Amino acid sequence: MKIGQRWPENEMQECKVIFSRALRVVVCAVAFIFICSCKGLAVDKEFPQNVEVLYSSLQCGRNVEGPAVSWISDMQQLNLVYKRLTRHILGLDIKIPTVDFDKDAVILIEMGQRPTTGYALVLGEGPLLISDGVVNMKTIWVKPAQDAAQAQLVTSPCIIVKFISGDYTRIRVLDQENKMVAETTVGIGDTP
Image (cartoon, rainbow, N blue to C red; front, side, top):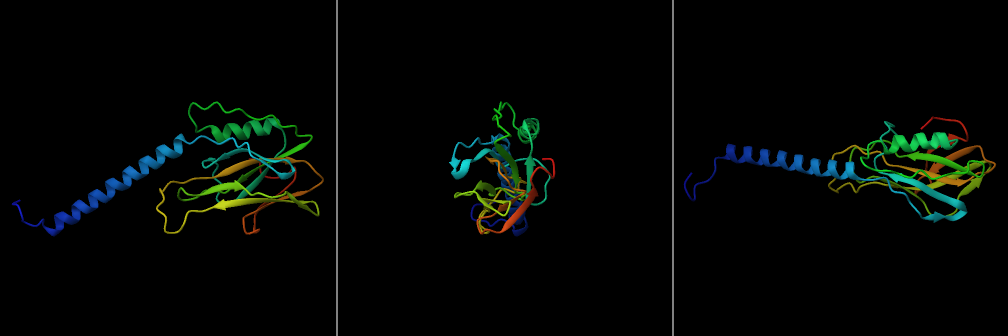
């Protein structure tokens, strides 16, 4: 090809396609490395009425399609849940908190599988709402902006929450708009 001569249109299109594919592979590889290296976050923040996040992660690894909440009934079950949630994290020695199940209740809240990065699940602030035997747990369901560039990588955000035991029969998980996204019966339900 001589200086000043234009590239043939078909070769130019082929170069654009190759570059586009290479860029996608690089973005996916970087996102994969980032997600795989993410450690679960042990959150220290205390919330009113003894509500505490024991564990939070963007990659909980359970094949749950939609939102879910699961009751964790004892220390043995909590240990199993922690092992399952952290099995994909290499070289991490996570300390499982000790919970007094006579005084405290523990639930696993899952957002379900999401098609991209940019999703997260956060405990909402404010008091724990208990009414007519039902606990209403406020959460914030973070979603990526529609026009935001996101890595095409399946994620499954979750949090493990500890709160004071009480005389209630149901747990409802509410999003930031106070819409119920998941519900379970106390002491019964899907084993996480």
